[in-house]
Image (cartoon, rainbow, N blue to C red; front, side, top):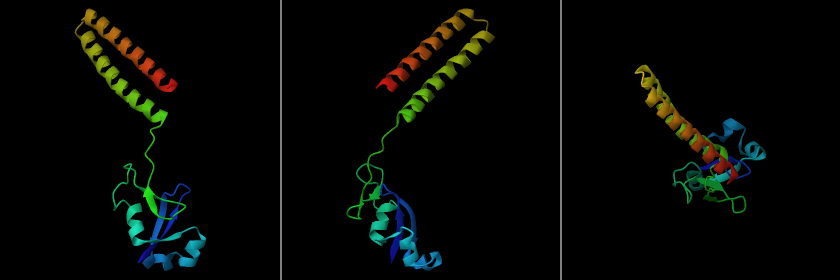
Length: 137
């Protein structure tokens, strides 16, 4: 048994057809013309994650030179993803303070409301500073 697989330009597997099913897809010759590549069952096991997650924990891709599985590059966290994590951390803090402010207002504790509002503003300022640091890094 073998597989016909299609890979993108980075070597990531996009589609796979086992040899026992290739006739349903027009036959081996047609699939090869459509960009599929014949690979061994052993190599296929790397691409589907049955041989671990590779050196970087991101799985395996096809080396365009050797045609063999190699460890996929480490995942690079984008600036947008970092900013979203930062945002979610600060949103949770702001929400908790807003809830505390509402409780303090319900209890007519104006002194505590003022204290919480100042704390809220401090957190917003800290968030803005960290976001600026992140985007300027």
